[in-house]
Amino acid sequence: MPIINRHGWALPESAVTPAGFSLGRRRLLEGALGGAVGGGLLSGAASADVPAQNALRFDPGRPVTPEKTVFTYNNYYEFGSQKSIWRAAQRLRLSPWSLTIDGLVKKPLTIALPDLIRRMPIEQRIYRHRCVEAWAMTVPWQGFALSALVKLAEPLGSAKFLAFTTVEQKDTMPGLVESWYPWPYREGVTMAEATNELAFLATGLYGMPLKPQNGGPIRLVLPWKYGFKSAKSLIRISFVEKQPPTFWSFIAPNEYGFWANVNPAVPHPRWSQAYERLIGTNQRVPTRIYNGYGKWVAPLYAGMPKSIWLYR
Ligand code: MTE
Image 1: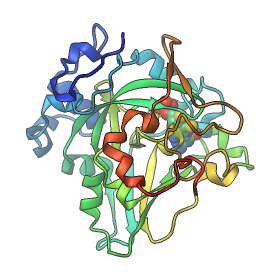
Image 2 (image 1 turned 60 degrees about the horizontal axis):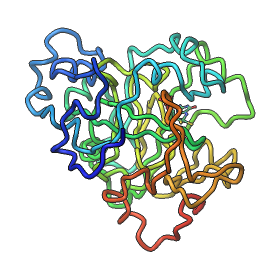
Image 3 (image 1 turned 120 degrees about the horizontal axis):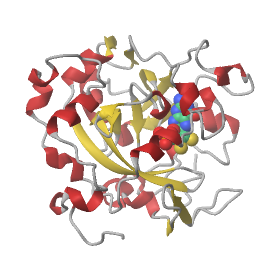
């Protein structure tokens, strides 16, 4: 049953979570920390500032999708173009993992993922997740705001965009042999989008370390955009001056443009975006502009044409 007219902070967790899913504080942190930190993780600075209520800050207004569905219905082309890549993805090597932050920043750095996570304010976000293929889920991510990483990076005034590069592991990713794809998978956002409070870097989900098929050990989550913008398994975030090239806009710019904001009024050239199918229940529900997050993100696009999905 849809939940309407509630303020996110006021919503009881039981209203958005199915029976049996409730994240305790400890599990929340363990998930966010990706299991990469080991014993003593709760004694770190991150644990002190995790209000459990953060889970409800951005009311999804829908029940959380069962975790089995989120773990077994995926898009991850490096492992193949089927939804059933989860088994193949278990080969991905998640550790050791480091993230490089470079480009137009004061101090470029390469940091081991556990060290980065320890420095970030960890929280949970339950977000609607909408694929350009017109299916949707509701996912409880753990991680930290992308804006916190931007702050850490100290970008120069000339930095206008963030370019995301994802991992290429030739020995574990069979999809990389398909040479007509412009590997590696890359994405990009403007600085204003990156510092919007919704933009998130996930390192866990359902209180567990982020699984390989969902983009472990660290992925982007931009809930107001089609899912292809949310690049998985990140290894580099570069601050740049010009709009960066992206994987899908290179393949089909008229189908998967740079902006890719969820918009029911702009059909994909080959199908309508007016409705979406909820994976798990198969319920068909109307698509909402910006996936229902207009309150937070509509000002980012003020003055741009309503056909923003194709606008590039
Ligand atoms: N990131 C990489 N590296 N490779 C991919 O194929 N697919 C994208 C996005 N991120 C993709 C990716 C697409 S099309 C979607 S809809 C989401 O991941 C799917 O995320 P999920 O499998 O966790 O639902």
